[in-house]
Image (tube, rainbow, N blue to C red; front, side):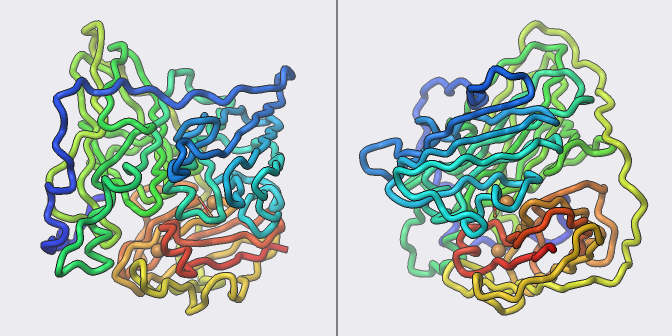
Length: 445
Ligand code: C2O
Ligand code: CU
Ligand code: CU
């Protein structure tokens, strides 16, 4: 989160400015969290939801669930039986992958454990919600086009002991299509062109929206990076993290900024005082931060003039003591640095990979070694993991994650507690890198 290495020198092709189209002097659009998906089942402990994936326009380039992008937020409580019926009204096969959710392998929607849903067909994904947190859903076949087209939404599971405060859901994505298409440049390389992505953020589909909150209140902000390829480096004054991928932290953590990789989530506490504040994002690339000015991605105003309340305790139970120096059971070497280059794990191209075996109920330490100049946000399906070390040092705080970003030429060791049988995918969450083959299998028996 705080970076020790220098900003990349910005090549001519990524000089800031020209990407941002001139802003009209129109009033900022209002912010709203995506609507909550309607629960079709009256029984209290069952949540039944129908989601229809369909084009949003005649060209078929913009896609959404139930007529919107992001789609409605799926909400359940720990202990609920959740059933989501996906109706495919797209022209191509799709799946619903429930990113970060602990569920039976056949319900993972990875496109392998259960066949993709053909156009005109439907499939019902069923699981019991057993971990509280902020998750998200997206297709897992044709993902570059489908996610970039707008198919994603948040999935929130409330825990029994969560403090009772209002929350807001912020699903970040990029302006689709031409607004981020790089202009041709004589010195452009695929890498410098990719630098230019991630500079035109949308929050819940709106550009730089404005939100007014009651002063004196506490709000839980649930933040998802649903971009296909761009890291979101953001901050606001007094940024206090209360949760990451797999729910609340043991104790809140104050940070200057957050670099949120595609697929990654954090939760933060907003204590609303009389002062308005802006959420700003810096230009960022998957090779590292790039030079340029921050842009305001969300403005938060306050009503009523009351002072900010005291921080809430939030804490989840502490994580168990762990042997950070334990010898890894397997090593995954990540190579390849960009679209058009061969992105691989252990030199293999998915799906032609050697699965890494794991036994249910037996802890497993994986060493992830990034031997490339690109970051790679590595994600494991169906399981949480704990980062044991980053280049041999303990991470700044302990947490359960399902996505963790490796800086260029860095190594992380993670602890997995495999408890669900299946051929679980693990991959970089830059979708162009998955397309290049950067995925493997953790085979849990
Ligand atoms: Cu968010 Cu394999 O996915
Ligand atoms: Cu996933
Ligand atoms: Cu990658």
